[in-house]
Length: 116
Image 1 (cartoon, rainbow, N blue to C red):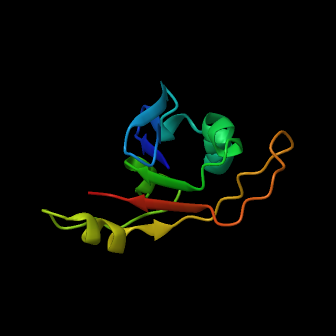
Image 2 (cartoon, rainbow, N blue to C red):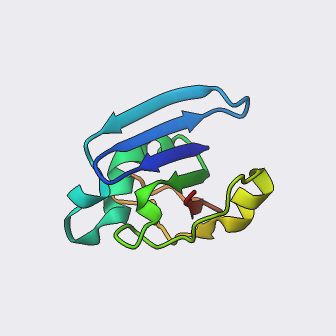
């Protein structure tokens, strides 16, 4: 699984193993305000494409990427929120991860956005 915290001024991504351990991480100044012409899909592909090419099939996006200024707006969830509430409040985001460099088929890539 890949967890992404995509804020206004920064991007942080984590490749998470089945045991919950962080296998790899990436961060940088690519906040949502830095993405040109709302090219969120292309920006995400550039950041996590190598992990997707290794077989990751789930991506959870969180942070301001789920705001009105982000990729698509996700509703706020009331707190406290347990895992079931987080899952119920997540919304799917369409995303074709493939590019010319990554042409392997992917059966079910789920991209979810949630905001707290």
